[in-house]
Image 1 (cartoon, rainbow, N blue to C red):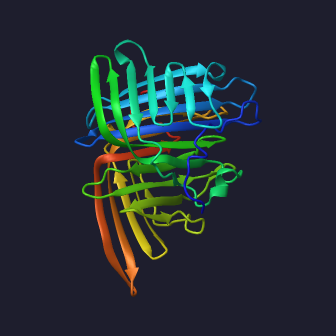
Image 2: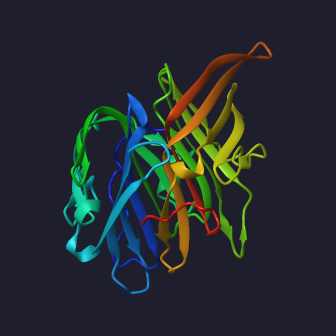
Image 3: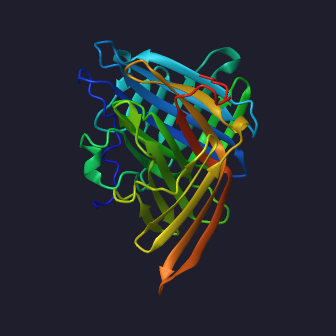
Amino acid sequence: MPPPSHSTDCVRWKPGRRGGHVESFFLKANNPRRPEQAFWLKFTILDPGSGTEAVAEVWAIRLPSRGGPHQAAKATYPSSGCRLTGDKLDLQVGKCVLQAGRTRGIVGDGEEQICWDLEFDYQDQEVMHGLPHRWMYEASFPRNKVYTSCPSTRFRGTISRGDDRWEVSDWPGMLGHNWGAAHNPSYHWAQCNLFEDADCVFEGYSARLKLGPWLSPWLTGAVVRFEGTELRFNSVSGALNRSVRAELFSWSFTAQQAGWRLSWQVEAAREDFAGLTYINPGGDENYCLNSKIATCTLQLQRREQGTWKDVADLIGRHSCAYEILVQETDHGVPILV
């Protein structure tokens, strides 16, 4: 595989192209001294693919503490009035800007308005690719692409809601990017770079693909960077993983590859999720149950002389980004935007 780069870190949407398109750049960070204080920002493009003009949106969520109340705002603009650059990371949507190492913006009104002005480390980051082969990011298969441009960055600046201003000083976080013809109909996704007493980054997913009127079994992949070594559990042959346990607010699996074994589990209480409505190009809706303060555990073992040896037993306590996409409405999570 070629060395990681930011070469795909630009808008992949092409105006006028046939078919629908959804695309997101998303950022999150946790307060390292109080991880349950976190924020999430997302720049999106939604093209219905039916001759109707595409829209660009900016979403913002602040999570002041466990159990809420979560604070959310969103702004929507016609794409023709936005700067959506296709050769570098440079977006301007309304009053919101995302560039390499910088983001600022204002969304919402009155007391619910969320404002931010943040810098983050960009040039020193090594991209984490969720798909097993680089050619998959240019090919038609799979339909949905995901990677993390900045898997273990640091944010500095401010983010405010009304008069409540947070000073952000070296908060660990990430910048990710995904796109496709539509939102995947069902998935669990998680990312954590704030484990207790460990240098580790995890990102993984279990997704069910649409196959005509049916959904596929869970297809799973993950990448772990532990103490400078990247471990990839995302091969095509290992995607159909029967160990997956995907419940409404929890997800776990085990995976083996190249002499390593990964055991993963993440969960969060219902009140630690914010509900978001994701609209597909065809107009149908999915619901994203979004938490940035989930708790995860990660175990690594290495096979030596026919025996599995324990290498790491880690916990990310209320510091894990965890998203669940569902089509059902009976999940009990309030839909904020």
